[in-house]
Image (cartoon, rainbow, N blue to C red; front, side, top):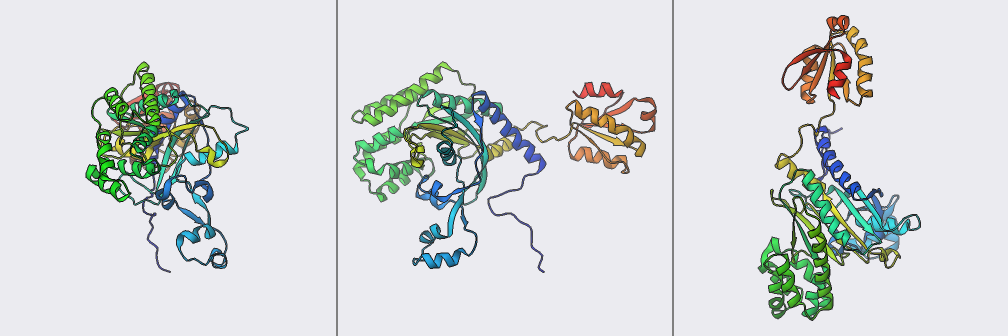
Length: 455
C-alpha cells in the first residue's frame, strides 16, 4: 500500500497548543465584552439545509458555499430526476445540505424556529467556525471562526452605537492601538441609486463601489458601465463616491446631493443619530468614520453597515456587520428587525502576531511542574499536586524515572515558569526546592508557602 503524505485541505489549518492558547485569549476577551453588554451565547449546527442558506448572500455567496452530497446512491437519483447536466441544475438533486457560510443566517433561522421561547429584544453572541470555498490567501481561509453579536426585536439606533463601543472595548483590550470603525447606511446607497433612476440596480451599484479601495475609481467606473450605468450616471455620483471632510461635513454634502430622495435623507438621519449617541460615550481607541464607499455586497443589509480596519498592519477588514430588517421574513417571521456585527478572529490573530500583542502567558498551560529524583519523591509529590490543583494552580507531575535534566527541558519546552524539585533531602525536611525557570533562582519553601506564593 502506498504511503499517503499527511496534509490538510488548502485554506484550513491545524492549531498547536501555543496557538490555541492565543486563540482562546482572543475569544475569551471578546466574549467577556459581549457578556458585559448583555449578550448571551448560543450555538447552531455546522450544516444547515441548503434552502436555508441559498439566496441570502447573492450569487457570489451561493457559489462559495460548500455543499454536502446526499448519502446513498445520489448519482442514480440525479440521473432519474434530472435531464440537464449543468452543475447548478444537479445541485438541488444531489445536495440538500451545506456547511454554514456565516453565523447570521443560521441565527435568523434559530430566532424563527424558537420564537415562542425567546424574550425580545433578543441579544445573542456566537463563536463558531464557518466555511467558504474561497481562494486561500493571506488573511483569507476556507475554514475560519466568526465571533458574532446580534440583537433582534429592537429598531433603536442605540444598538448600532453599542456595536461601535463593543468593537472599541474588545479590540482595545486585545492591545490594538489604532483602528477605524467605518460606518455607512444602505438607505444612503439606495438614495444614490434613486437620484440617477437606477433603484433596481442597487446591488450592482453597491457591489461595484465596495471595490473602490481595491480597483480604484477607474475600475469602479469600468464595472458600472459593464452593468448598464451611463457616463452621465457615473459623473453624477462621482462626487458622492469621492466625499471628503469630517463626518459632519460629509453628512452635509450628502444631504445636499440627496435632497430629492426621502430614503437617502432617512439614511443620513440614522447615521447622525448613531454619531450623537457616540458623542455621549467617549471611545477609548477607535476612530469612527462615515465611509460612503462601504457597501458590503450582502443582500440582507437594509440600514447601518459596519467595517473595522486596523491601521497598524496590512490586513483586510477585521470585523463588520449591519442592520438586516427583512432577514427573518425569509423564514416566515415578518416585521422583526435585527442588527449584528462580527469579529474576524483569524485575521485579528494574524494582526496580533505581527504586532507581537499576545501576552507571554497566553499559551501557557501549567504554572508549575513537580520534578522527582525517584519513586519516593513521586509518592511524596502526589498529595502536594492535589493541593496545588485544589488551590486553582495548574500543575503537572513528571513521572519518576527520567533524569532531572530531561524534566527541566520539558518545563522549558512548555514554558512552565516554576519547577518544584523533590529529592530525599526535601522529603526529610519538608523544605522543597522551588526554581524560577526564567531567572534560574532557587529557594527552599514549605508546601503551604509554595501554594501561597503561586496563588
